[in-house]
Image (cartoon, rainbow, N blue to C red; front, side, top):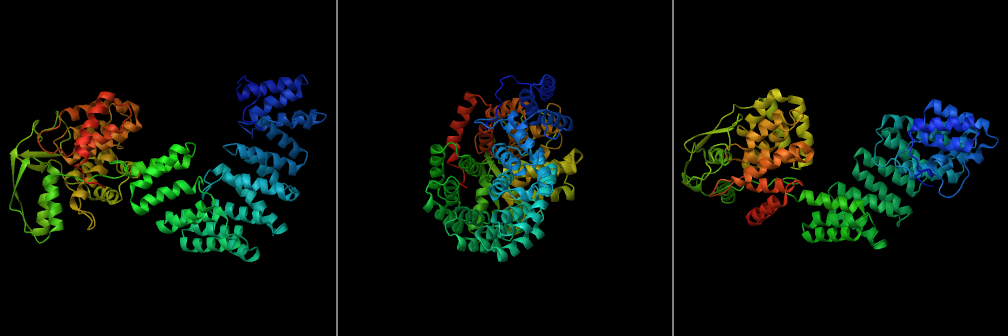
Length: 596
């Protein structure tokens, strides 16, 4: 069987139908079937095309001769042969061949045909055990996971599942039939019915398949303990069944029980040392269990050796994202004042500072954190801060004239330039900031927040960056403020659409160019995400990043430099000269960063 027709001429479905009608009129029925099969492969339920197929079948002396079985037959022709078989009530052969077609296609395009045939009187019972098993295996393979969400597909699967429930009354001892029936009920969301049947099946037809059915229902219901019990019961019937060992390993690791999951992956590897699923997952979870980069290196080696293993490549990519600053984790601010507060945390017996001398001016956010921390811990209203040298360019001023200015200065003391946020907006941003950081997940939630509140609440999205809500007890004040600012910047990134004249471009560019602060980095992260999503945006964002990189205030620490470097390097469109300059600066900075 092949996915491609023998003809090299590409025709539209409508052209193929016209050719089929001409061929039928000329008595060239094989040619008519060839063209019509191609059209039906794009729209199998088209009533007019099916009527034409019926005309061809009725015209032919022996319609089966129109589609002879041979090596490398075009899948659409084989599907039409199955249709002819069903038209002549040869249901066993029809479903057998269409199941074979189902196996090779990415999408179950002919599922409506099967559900129609399967629902006819006497069709399902006409299937031999071999055909029934082939069909059920092909059907389940098309719907991995725990849900079937496509409405049109669900309708066909519902019809098939109803017939399976009737068929089970006729052949109650068919293990594959019992397994498939419960699996489809589970994927359709009929969990109560699936659970009741699975429990009954385990009593009436005890075997590893019915035990696994019960385990899968419990897993879908979120009851991992009962699912594990059911899997262990399945192993009593067949202790060597690798699929059960893999399911147990996956379930243990999915619920954070890495050590037990790794043990079950090892059981699989004892039988098949290079198992394409167990081996990469074993290496992946060993890293999380031991926090040893040796396991990441071994996963990298595995991916290099087995380049066609998509699962392994995805795991390695996920691991690299998790270990990548600003993608998988958010590096903490490293201002001198924040380092001082770290010291206070480790040595709480120390008294408060009364004055603080810094080599250069630090960010307004670090100043806010310092004052808030000392007030909370020591009831100290304020602290006198002195600096030895003011940087160039002046870190108190935006790089250019801006409309959205978060901070203003009196001397070297910063003050918020935006009023506090609306409480409801602050609550939404705080809920996001309280979640573990992962850029992809935060972006999804930020989109929802932006959609809920809209650009008319821009002042609140800006206000929360300088007027943060109370931090949760388990999150340090400096980490909390930083998260709040990044969460709000990501929400601003989705307050509207488009790019050149968008509000999000104006606001985020102003924040990136504003006075030296953590909020610059928050804007940079949001802009990096937009540059990755929108090619047009990257043409403006990359020059902005180059501009910021060339104008870093010095001497002293710049709180957004590391973020600017990392986020710039994630953009594939930056030129080689800029990339090399970034890499050189990163090499200098990376040893100074706090490791994850």
